[in-house]
Image 1 (cartoon, rainbow, N blue to C red):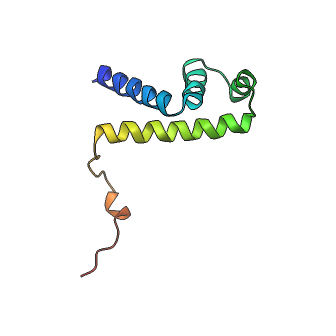
Image 2: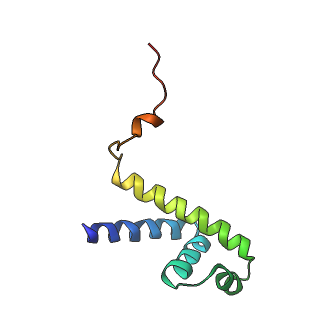
Length: 88
């Protein structure tokens, strides 16, 4: 349900906050605050590249965290193309 998804995102953000407060702050400023990387960099006193690097890491970290919570996804169309070849 949508409520469960929001709760999963909130829990993932809380875990990120505990693991890396600076990256969590960047997520809050960019995603919820609508700030650009340049604006976030100026606010935090870091380079724009640092913000972009932390933003990319945080997005991947959150995706992984949420994905782990959801469990394995059933294979979709074309999934077999990504399977390792089986030896006879």
